[in-house]
Length: 447
Image (tube, rainbow, N blue to C red; front, side):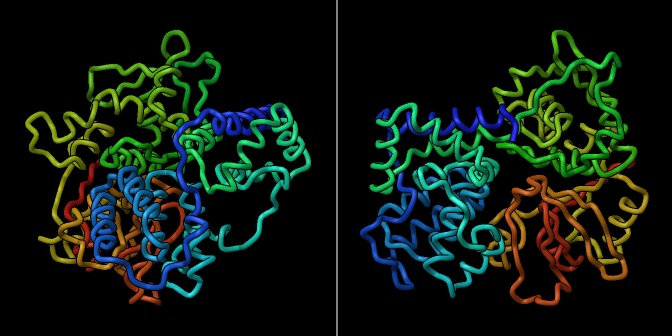
């Protein structure tokens, strides 16, 4: 373990302790200790509240949905459905530590439920049981830490760093202990812990060449280097993911980025005469932290080009966002069709033509009001990348731009995965007939 990692660990643990002693608003991290586990069934008002909170989730207002579920949890007896929905919304809002805590509660208290099975699938490490914990570290602090830091706590060096940090102020340590006994924790503390350990893109030294990235650099990361941030720009991220998997697309994106002045980068989209300057400060301010630096830089440029998604429907506000996103990053005209108005053969040719010729193709799902009565297999009103097609099995391979942080789904009526199969890193397979029910449009470009 590096000295830098240990220092980060010590600083963050101490920071967590200090925040508890500052009198900030507290939030329940576990169900109230004096609450009995509820029997199946909830009050009518709670059901209404749950539906409203879930409605925010289907509108992709994930943070608001998570906050709404937290409010319900505070005033309602625990039940599997409520806590499972809270898991989904917190996970979608990138509050993974909180999602894990809630999932662990569902698994521990509603072990035989369907919701417990789903939670085990989402968080196998939680389902696996006990983890090595530093006995001197309050559970409320340990649970707030990201997995990378929790892994450090399993090493002698990591535990020593924690003890050293806590020993610097015994009063803070006791404050945390008391907060743990009361089942209280500050939500901002959890977020601070997560952000502190999120790998932040750091600008490297200028290499002397004009272009900081090569097609090989982008190919090495591929779509896995892209992880959609807090911005509602799936319509662009899906297209960037498509290019990241294609040789010509990788070369195209590498050519978009060059070095700027004073350690900055400059992005120029194909066919766009404007240049978008990306600095380290801008990167940090926006909180855009894709896994790959090139992806973060391009996303920062997109946020500048379409502030608040202004212009995402085209100059006349009459275009599909899929079309605008694809044309922005490729510089080529996009062809858009509606799967519901095509025959299966036509759709197969449209998708197969793009995939076989290694050209980008993306698709968008219907809003919740249209697919709400169908089994939950996709995120409503969301853009996805099509990364493969098996014509023999009539199955399309699709990727969510949220990558490894994507919500996972399962079909309870298709155990043989003939129509739907959830894979890893946001990837799943879906049959063409099913695709026509869930996706309202599909766009491709030939680069």
